[in-house]
Image (cartoon, rainbow, N blue to C red; front, side, top):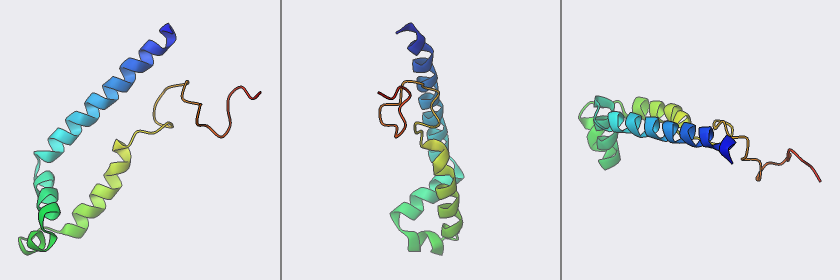
Length: 88
């Protein structure tokens, strides 16, 4: 049980970092552009925002935010694996 504690802190650290990055994104110039695209894409383009560029950057950057089993340093997440560690 005690060997899982460092992984717990690592996971929470990653969650806090992701939350801080998202907070900074919302308050940045790019975040305002994304909110305007979300509100009305045609109006955002009329205001001079390159919507295709922002959508492409968002699509590219979202893979860094999504944490899945491969990104977490957690050796106990093998229950859903196609190849279990200890085959019976």
